[in-house]
Length: 59
Image (cartoon, rainbow, N blue to C red):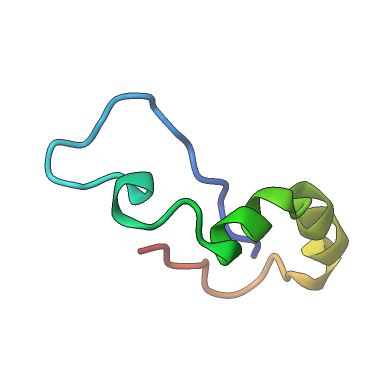
């Protein structure tokens, strides 16, 4: 079963820091993540997921 897409509500969570406030946004891996076509990767590996079995548990 493929993982669910993360939804952004636009409202801040009072007890959680936003990730962009915690990590260095100029770090090479952060910049690389912004250049990766994640939708293409999701579409390319989607057939590999099974509809049977236990769903993904997101933290």
